[in-house]
Length: 234
Image (cartoon, rainbow, N blue to C red; front, side, top):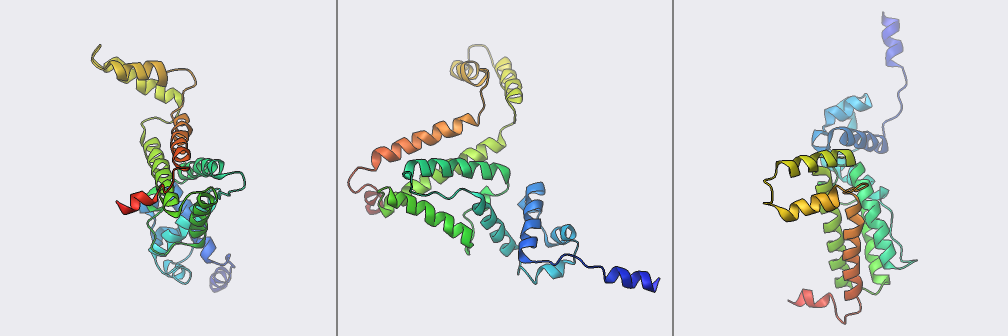
């Protein structure tokens, strides 16, 4: 019995590092959401005692900051090589893809007081692409804010919809149209029948259409002298 206990205690386990802690935390957040993340659950996933995690991360807030940094690291970094507009379009599409993959992340993305290097690198690259494209620093700030508000808002709405596939959308929309009083909501009916219920429609397609509307507006405002600075002085 003593020999068995000694053999079990000397069994080698892969060393715990900050990287393995954050990787396990990311898996847990993806599976159960960031609110379900606790030191005990994380320790169970790693197969260690909870106290051993504190050697690598001081507290849960540090883990959340690390997770946000991992998410930002997955987003495509914009470059000004082919112009600010394609860079911002690709970055927006990449951001949406990453946020849909990590559904818990939106509420945390810009909440960190001590952002990690990947987060800082991402923000610096976005500002740099705008500046290289001719935006003033104030204009870059306005454009950055407008794009992120749209991206985050779209993903929040997308993830809260009561359907995931085109088939489920059709079922939900047909049910709503059927239950509506005849003739009482003509515009809503027109949009459902003439748009959302057309073959091949996917709500996700609305993202890039709305994105282009914002990019069109930014492109039109860019040549205006002093655009961006006026908003600061008001």
